Image (cartoon, rainbow, N blue to C red; front, side, top):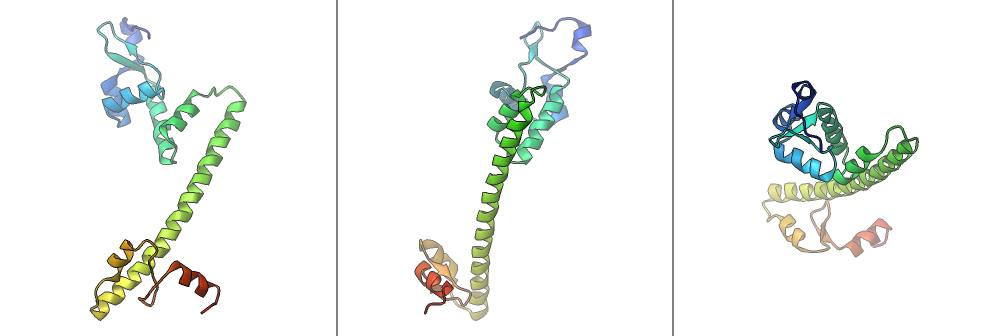
Length: 168
């Protein structure tokens, strides 16, 4: 880890507090990212203070964007460690993106399923409120396989499957 001593060298370096202010990350987060290998090791002043090259703020922007797309810090570490001049880099990044898209598709389907179930519960609650009956949702949440139908009656998963097939 280089020690920065001259004023000329100091012009291209940012103190950790300056990086934190420009990036919106805390000083602790910067240290953590450095430990994980997301950021290059900081240079040090003769008194031991961390100094980062000005380009580290752009790297943090990349990290934040990758996080917004759902990449984990480990996945981001792998991406930033890839050599941009290596033609295999893009193929590796493509694999990572395809994997992330598969994950997002699975999450999307799960969210859609949960939304459908919650819509059924919402309907059941509205009916209970309108009719002055007790809320059936709380009881149904306790049952491992309870599913409230739109009619407000409960049916088991077995009953649901039979009806879905058109059986009585």
